[in-house]
Amino acid sequence: MMCNPVCSPATKWLALGCLIIGCSCGPNEVEVATSAAQQQQVLALISSETGIVFPQNTRVINAARVFLKDPKLLLKAEVDRTDLERFVQSPPINGIKFQQRINLLKNQVKFRWWNPESQKNFKCGSAILPNGRGGFVVLLGLDNPDTVILFVVVART
Image 1 (cartoon, rainbow, N blue to C red):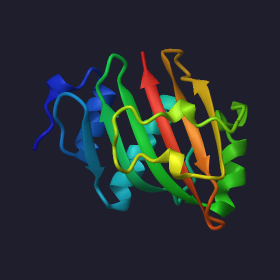
Image 2 (cartoon, rainbow, N blue to C red):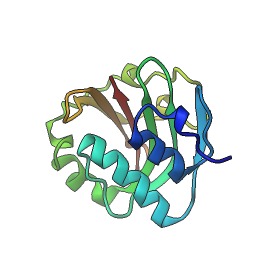
Image 3 (cartoon, one colour):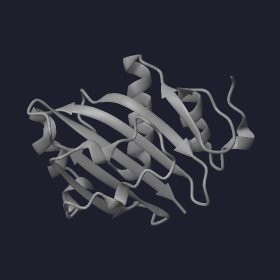
Image 4 (cartoon, rainbow, N blue to C red):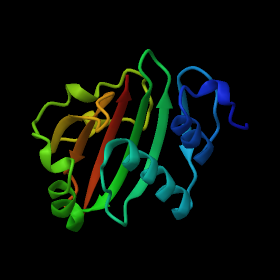
C-alpha cells in the first residue's frame, strides 16, 4: 500500500511512513524494512525530532506511528552493550534522570512487539523535545549481558 498524505499530520510523519512498509489512517502497526540503509533513515528521523544520537550499529527491531490526540512514534531497537556508556553520556540522554518506573511506557495500542514490561532489569526516563512541542521516553532494557534493548516513544503535541 502506498503512503497517503492525508494520514500524516506533519511532513516528518509522512516521511517515516514512506520509510516503513504500509500506511493507513488510525492506529497502525507497520514493519520496518530490513535494509541497513532504511534502518539508518528511521533512526535519523527520530534523531532529528529528539536530538538522540544512536550508536552506529543500532539495529531496528520494529517501529510504529500511532495517530491519537497527540501523534506518537514508537521504536524498539537493539544496540551492543559496549555502546551503552557512550549512548547515555551523549545529549539529550545525559540529561535524563533514569528510574525504575515502567509506567511511562504503557502499551496503550497493544502491539505484540511493544513489550517493555518484559524487561526485568531496566532504566527508564523522559525528556522534553528540543522544540518544546512534546516529549520522549527512553527505556534501556539491560537483561542481556551483550546487548541493550531500547524502547523509545516520541509524543508530539
